[in-house]
Every structure is written in structure tokens, then in C-alpha cells.
Length: 71
Image (cartoon, rainbow, N blue to C red; front, side, top):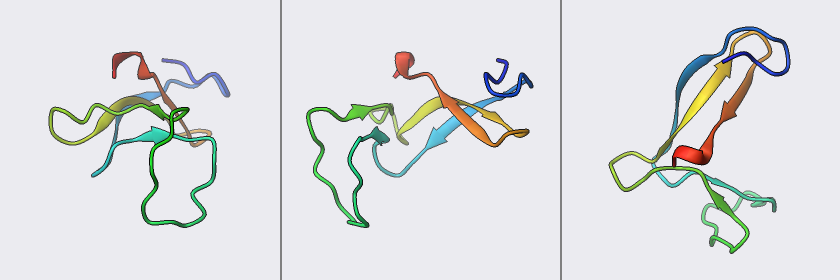
């Protein structure tokens, strides 16, 4: 996959976490725990071991892109 920012080839890999990976609009303000909200977007697969999602990393411009269609 080509980086949409700089055009370099991106490296395919995975974002992994010990907890679900969620995109949230609000700032957690340093809280250790956060209750999920209806508008949150869960991007991880957690039912089969470590929560993860497919991602692409650009080492040139330091960006990570995810595709959550395959979650």
C-alpha cells in the first residue's frame, strides 16, 4: 500500500493491545478506565486472543493507517 501522505510503500502489520482498541472523539483526560459510549468505533478483533487490527506503517512520515472493515 502506498502512503497517501508521501507516496512511499507502507509496511503491513498489526496494532495490538491488551484491551480493545477503540476510536473515541472525546479526550479521556488521563483516566485509567473509560466507559464505552454509543458513538465509539471499536476497531479491534478481541474474540480470538489479543485485540488487534490490521495496520500499515509509513517509516518515512511516521503515519499509521488502519482498515477496520476486516474487524
